[in-house]
Image 1 (cartoon, rainbow, N blue to C red):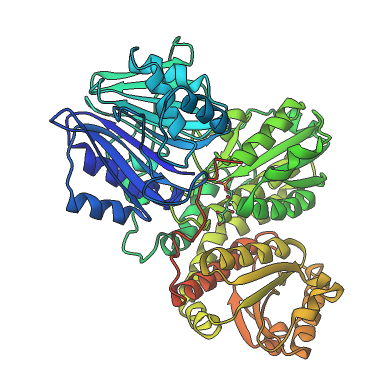
Image 2 (cartoon, rainbow, N blue to C red; image 1 turned 45 degrees about the horizontal axis):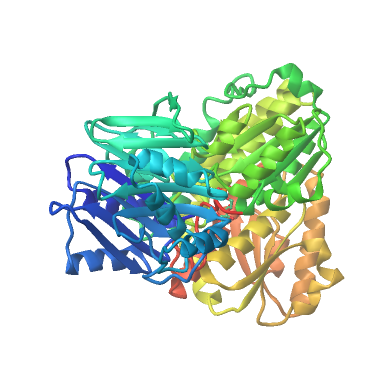
Length: 617
Ligand code: F6R
């Protein structure tokens, strides 16, 4: 978490840094700050607690200008979100400034040692030790001083350093959290994520762990922590800068919810043979023979991506008849897991940088399992560690609550399930063709679901004062109940739980009273007789909630006349194959959460205490 931006070139650095920080605010918004090298050869530093707009106001009241500089937006880990703890942090002389994303685990020991040597500390942060470590070697070129400093750190860091004594130079270092270098014409940039730079360049270099980048207006050099020169390839990013704008919507989240038909279509096209029903996963460096040999699949992820993983288990087990286990990235490696080379590990992450998921992926790899990434960010760490990636073509997701990335993850998992089914001989041509046709119809059906937004808004108006919510589902709908509850909690701060509907009688029924809204996922593929049993059981759950006076919101398929008759509120979605229904049924839940949060006056795009990329463990 935390976002970093740096600029060297001939233009004024402050607007470029502020604009970059605006695009990185999703990574943290507890405080923000910047430092630039001014014409009078001093460092101009401005910092403010709270959101970026406070920093903008501070600069409006006390302007500062310079042609190179660094900036930061913070998600607090060590030290309260005050102005004193806002980055950039300085050494004793005030000549060296540092912005940092990550955690310096040995900062207390380093701080004690530096204090004993006479260094004075002014903040509660772990980052400040870095500035003092660089200061200790300040007789050397800045890059050497930074190398000296980073070798003494344990933990993870992405940092950018500038020094008053070395004008026109920024030194960046990475071990853990992401850093990307943007290449312009006699101007160079460094940032935590691509959207910060898209308005200036599409040519980017993704720094690796252990890389140092030295940026000057003449160019960028890369070395390792020992000073050995490194060659780093440039990638051209195809994202349109407009994709990272709100485009007339009130919030990024709303825009991203409405982008889902396009995003799911882009994730599908090019991977399906429309006539043959065949699936093509050309980006994956695992041969069909290897796919045939796997005895099981494990999926690793966190948060919303973990919910997609749970739905993926249903898809893969039904279409490919191969056992699937799903693990939290944050839990997996702490139990000495049993992993074999006959197991395929699928790692799901929107950002491709989630520290827990990455660590779990490394554990699986180290134990011999080939890993495959489902990811939204080209060149991110998780994709680079994997034997291939199925990219979700959602485009940049800025709203902290994940929406379009989730439906694209479900789409990618469906494609993977079909591919495994075909490669392993469990999915015949007729069924493949039927499923591909169903999948190709999903974007159009998403448009229909979105066209009913006024229904979700009205429901939000009726329910926004509730203090608790339950979301219930069975089978592949249970992960969607979890995801619906997560969306509501994170943006509206209402307590919500997702539960398997059949488990209600084992305890949670005690919660039901006339004030509790219970959202029940009762959609079914009416063409499949085997979906009837589960549906009937879900209708019984609705009756049970009603008998206890709970307020039932039922998500049903068009034409439904059983669940709809007993529910208090009904949301209809088009029907499709059971395994694809999650892509449709999550959308009303995203919009319900959105409208409730807006009515409650919550900050939808930047909910309290959260950040989008969780690059610390
Ligand atoms: C919730 C949300 C988080 C992320 C989780 C994993 O809306 O966005 O729960 O899903 O932090 O992030 P990624 O997918 O980037 O690994």
